[in-house]
Image (cartoon, rainbow, N blue to C red; front, side, top):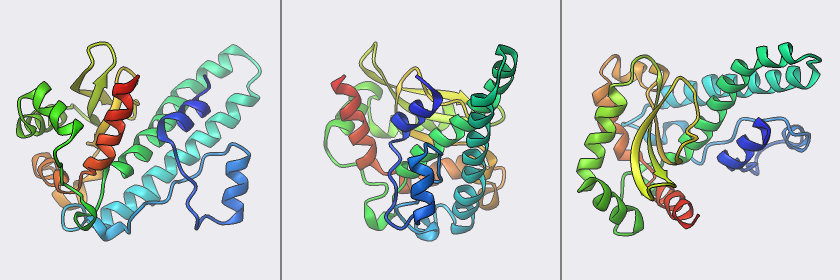
Length: 226
């Protein structure tokens, strides 16, 4: 499966109604576009500032989209195996960045829209079964993610072999391939530094207030069916 198809399958990017005709034309030609957010940039305040969200979404994620389109176009024109191999790092980095961030935005929701609220249901039951309690899960997720050296992502993933929820990490912009991603937390400095500086723990504590557990449960239920 091509990276284009992987990105389409994993991110399930929806074309927002407000996208203009030019963007729709790009999508029709298979060109990746920046997905619209389901909420304003400042809707996650005070937990994640509007300044961070705008820079993160319109700056960093847009750069991954541009880099992925450039790399895929170059790959399609490459005439030798060496040329194609040389492009793999760019495809992996930018493709992973696009996949991860498309998932990350769906991971989040304003408090007014249920952000941070985990109600009784399949996901809560699974977290309690696999980690002992929801608080124990959050503690494991935070400590594991904070321990990442350099940049990367902390994940709650569903292991299709063990049929359990597990906390895992990926480096840089590597997408999670070993598990079905349920919740992903971006621990690159651009995700928190303007607000929390070098104190990762405060960012990790704060983000639970805007985690979209409804979306996480939807992913969990879908993954557990397979």
